[in-house]
Every structure is written in structure tokens, then in C-alpha cells.
Picture 1 (spheres, one colour):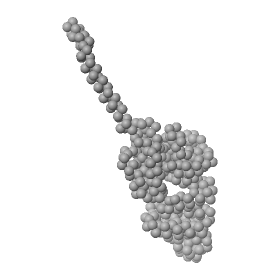
Picture 2: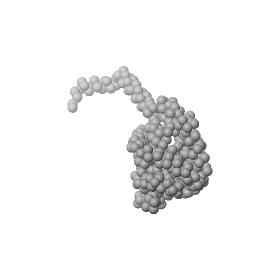
Picture 3: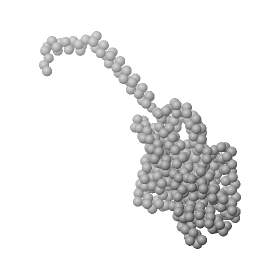
Picture 4: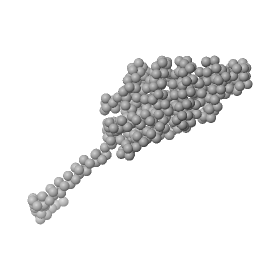
Length: 409
């Protein structure tokens, strides 16, 4: 394009005209100031509160978690209500809803009807935490939510004996934990994740050969180191101290077979959370391993009285199991007639639950009802209960022995 001389002259005049230049400078400066204000305000508006750094939140959250573990969801939500109203878009509330669902799943692992709902809720929490991390790198709450949500999904897969899937999902949670160690190295709850990593990375490949083929991507394990770290977490953790005590008890009861140590931990959890039926069942299992039959009977009476006195919701899963353990204590104390009644109560309650053939307690209660009946020379009753036990898929050894007793009668 070729400019005529008159155009060039006018352009030159405008460029050097002080009045025009002052006006341009004014508007350019105003625009720069405006965009600077907008730029500065956007991050402030978008920043998500880091709740874990708030001491008041820590106090309320600890009380709310105690309510949750004592199976008082309404009380927990009441404590968290002001925080949820102030920060309604925070992904922690999705995790909280997932934790409520988890207790329903854990209370009856033979019932798989809530598995999908639970996994979807935890995946939603993980997704929203990931979105937050893309906006705000190394947000501590988001890292915790990712670590916890994926770890609980992995935990459910392990409960379903889907070991490879559990390891794959759990590894995602472990990556979030590693980053959290760098971002918040002094967070006491890191001890829980470290303890779990150390113990189960050593235990799982030993106990489950199917996992050995993929155990190369597990972190290095140390069972005793894991136990020591979990013990420390059960004392120092802010949000995970209950889980640390629970898993330490589980390790002592199921893997290390140090029943006295498990008893102390489960008794502490039962005392702290008396409305939690799951902890009561674990305490009774531990007493049975120690052959403490008098304490088993005493604790059964205490549990039934506590449920009635406090008008707690009916829990047939708990009732079926504690009637079974009550019967076991009576049986080995020579109280055959009373034990048969207790075993019969357990069998009746178990038959009302979903998937009764998959329940260990239902199998064992039926088998011991058969044994007690046989010893009382009530052979027709014995055959009835042995047939139930023989038809079970859970506890194959008890089912096999029930079939043998049927042939002998």
C-alpha cells in the first residue's frame, strides 16, 4: 500500500501531537489498571479454602469424625453445617458422604448392593479434588481427598478379593500421599498412610500369591515398621487416629495373631464409640480367640442392654453375630441347652439377611447348633441345622464337616 504525502503528514502530526498522545496514554493506563485489578481479583475469588490449616475446623472436624464413628451421622452433619454453608463447593463434602456410605458397606460386607453407589461417590470426590488441583496446584485438602477416596475404593476391592484391582487403584492414592508428604511433611495423619504402606506392602505379596506378579510396583515394605508407625498414628493423627487404631487391631487379630494387643485396641474403640456395632463384633471375635468365655457373656449382656437402653436402631447383622458368639461362650462353658437356643437365634436372624449362604456367622451358627443338638441327642434338630451348614458357601471346612455329621447320624 502506498500512502499519499498528505496522509503521511497527518499521521506524523497525530503521532507527535501532545494532546492526542496524552489522551491515548490516559486510556491505555486506565485499561492496564483495570486488567491488573481483574487479574488480581480472579485468583482471590477462585482460591479454595484450605480447611486443614484452620484450627477451628480441626476442632469441629475431630468432634464430627467422632460422631460419624459413633454412628451419629446427624450429629456429625450438625457440627459441619457452618463449614458446609461457608464453603459449599469444597470437595470434602463429597468425601464425607462417601464415608457415611462406607460405614453402611462395612457394617455388612456380605451385602454388595451399596458397592456401586459407594465407589461412584468416592470417584466423584476424587474427580473434584483433581479439578481443584488443576486450578490450585498442591492444595492440601485436595491431596488428602484424593488419597483417602482412592484408598477407600482400593479397600473395598480388597474386601471383595479383587487384589490386582485394589493395588491399581491404591497406587493412585499412594501418589497423592507422596505429594502430600512433600507439601505438608509435618501433617500427623501422614503417619497413618505411611504405616499402612509399610505393613501391607510387605504382607500382601506373602499372603496372596496372585499379587506377586504385580508386586514390583508396590513400595518397599516393612511389617514391624508399619506396626510401629500405625501405633504412633493412633496417638498423634488428627483425622485418622481411629482408622490407625482399627487397622492396628486388625493386623494383630488377623495377621500377627497377637490377640491381647488386639483386645486392648478394640476395647478402646468400643469404649470410645459404644454405638458402633462393628467395633463390638470385633471385640467379641478377639475375646473368642482368647477363650475368655465369661467376658464374652458379660459383654453380650452389656451390648444388648446398651442397645435397648439407648433405643438404638435394630441391627440384625450385629445381633446375628453376637448371638453366635454368646452361644460359643455357653457351648464351651458346658451350657449346651442355652447355647443351642443362642445358636438358633443367630441362625434365625441370619436367614433374614441378604446372601445368607455367603455369611461366615450363619454357617458357623448352624454348624454349632447341629453340634449342640447332637450332643443333646436331638437328632432331628441336628440334621436340620447340619443341612443348613452343609448348603453354605462360606466357611467350607464347616460345611464339609456338617456333611460328614449328616452321614454319621
